[in-house]
Image (tube, rainbow, N blue to C red; front, side):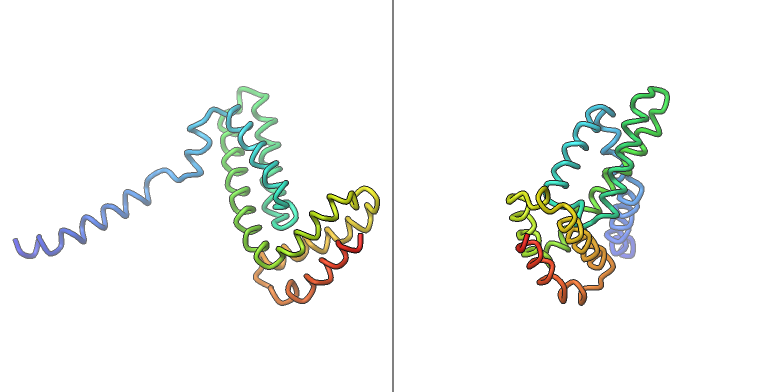
Length: 170
């Protein structure tokens, strides 16, 4: 009896862990709790919010994958016969968007001053007056975001001042 009382907390912990492992994940329930139309509307809003926060530049690959999955979900939604495909693409979009936001958060910690300089350049309409130069600098910012994603921080630290100054010159 003493042995059973000793092992009971371990058994309860083990069973709790197993139930957590086999339970539905947050991403799986996200697309199934809401109907597809509601989820598309919510994701469109979340994508625009991420774009406004410059996640599309700071986590380019993840963001692009999220938008691609979103577009596929929109296409599938139009065809009522592809419900499972729509849900799968909604789930992919949500997962990629979460990764993009997390990656952008890390990039922001290294590039916050650059992001502020870019916002000022956009407010001054530099992207309209100097589209090629602005695009070139954006490319360098995207590359810095890729370097942060791959944990290669030294080039980011070395070049962030140059990128910031170039945005401010516009």
